[in-house]
Image (tube, rainbow, N blue to C red):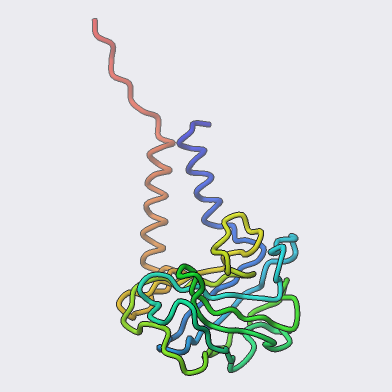
Length: 209
């Protein structure tokens, strides 16, 4: 099999196979002192994937110009409801900035979150009425499992990135959004044309006399 055909086959497999667990993080709305979000799907766990520390914690990290509050102060969090079935309620949580680099909301629950499912219900996180977020800002709101006090961890030892959304001038852009049917049809047609091109025998030019 040629390299091109192998690449096409791998692309098709990657497009159809879904991971054993999938957490969908949706930010419905945000204000200067709150975020309303939804969690659907199942947390990692069956394959042993979990942060080495704080498996009972999720953190929401803010980057870009979204953050407008102090880099050292923090405010206590409250949740309107549990975002996971079986989380056992929030037992600690604050929002703030630390060291001028990490700005996030951390939410610790009474139970380990391994393998739990999101409720699919909109949950509002509010922090003490303090105006920390820029409602016209641009940046990223990312959800991590574990603690991001020392920053995002690409090796997944302290925390695991579960999902993120972009915000542009205060408007939420959901990067997890499923493509529209027309976009899917166009993508499928493109793959079909590519497959036909790769499998059709090339014509050879006659050798010069």
